[in-house]
Image 1 (tube, rainbow, N blue to C red):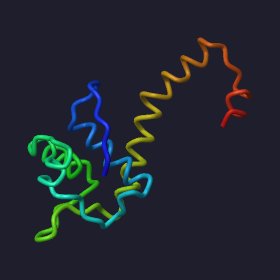
Image 2 (cartoon, rainbow, N blue to C red):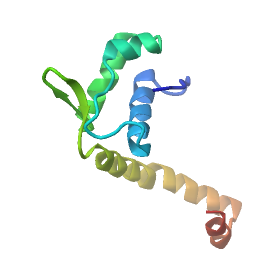
Image 3 (cartoon, helix red, strand yellow):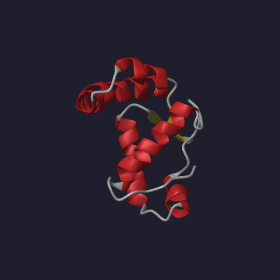
Image 4 (cartoon, rainbow, N blue to C red):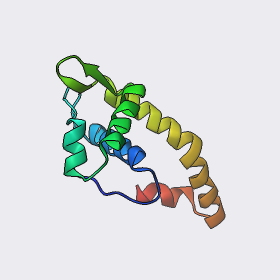
Length: 116
């Protein structure tokens, strides 16, 4: 895992986003173990409580589960859960901002589609 932190969001949220992105792109696979809290904390010089909070957020989001004697495992439907959540966020928060920007800049839909 490699992370780049910024000052715009809490580290806990950034860590959750990084793990979710790694699941989406396939760097972390479903049914794979997450690294232990202490390993991540040591490797990235983070407070173990910060990492533990991020891992708990992933459990609450239904992305990982705690398996006795194994640790935290990425759930079999984690990618689907993350996709649905990210799509909802995009459609309700990001897309309205993009639409407003498109209108304000008087951009043509055809030109935007060509750029894809």
